[in-house]
Image (cartoon, rainbow, N blue to C red; front, side, top):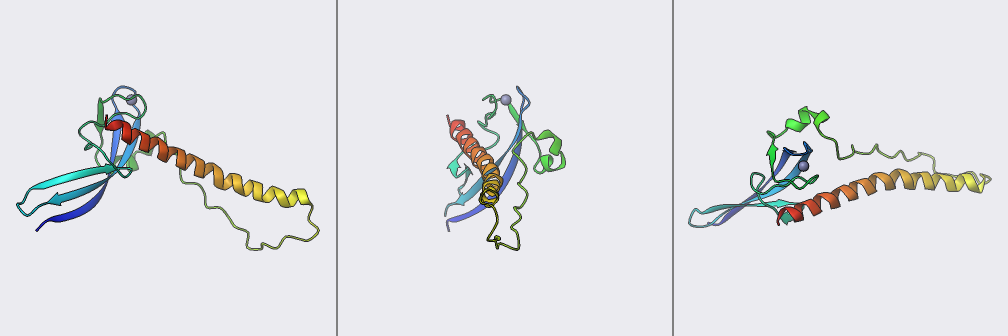
Length: 142
Ligand SMILES: [Zn+2]
């Protein structure tokens, strides 16, 4: 019977030219058909990607001369990773939302502005990082 199952793998890489260190999260579809033939399909960022050992290029300088670390290596050596930004602190929502009726208008408008910055900056960094990674995955195919 045809069979399919999916695994998630995180591969840490290092560029041997510019020494950039990064990680790629893969979704691997393991397929097998009725004749016992097996194949793996590697996806990165939702798009097909070459397996980590074939055709991975550095997102920093584009070199194909890269090596990889054992799974979980970077979790034990966080000093090697220059990015992405750490998870933002959870935004504290005040328990009391009632605004005093006589509060100055400037003070009332300052709070939503700071909240927008607190939410928007980490979100922009995250989205930028995702776009960067996805563009890198697309370029890897060429
Ligand atoms: Zn590089």
